[in-house]
Image (tube, rainbow, N blue to C red; front, top):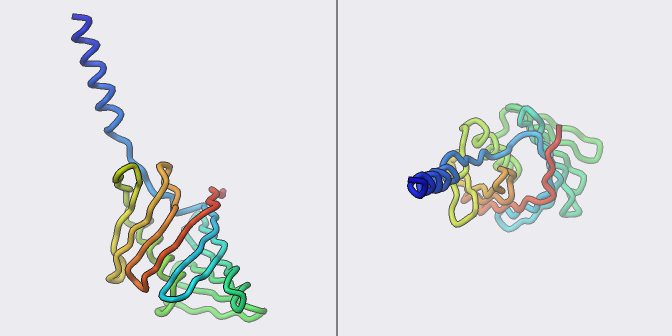
Length: 163
């Protein structure tokens, strides 16, 4: 009888380890560095996502646009560069960083869970006719983003949770 109980406990533990382990992508209260490849261009930036999901990118490379700040707040984009500031409501053409903002908003608003495949966690979706794939850590922190819009590839590193 003890062996039967032990076998049932073992099976229960195995089932318990595989059930209920959901990974929710973290898309708020983050700071990270990123390298973005979009069409034939490469950009580097420091990024911040606040508690409301607003995203700010401070461009660090290439040199000719170093210091450009892009702030996505709700339906508004504010660009600041070399003392000049421009704000646009409902921006249509936002380039690589606008696409990234839309994808993170889609993940946040869609209450998405990460699926696991061969030990890696992915969040897949579609926004504005473009498919994307966000790789996250087991804790849900973003690692890499790929989208078929503009052959967008984004490497994410030095991720920190902010408060």
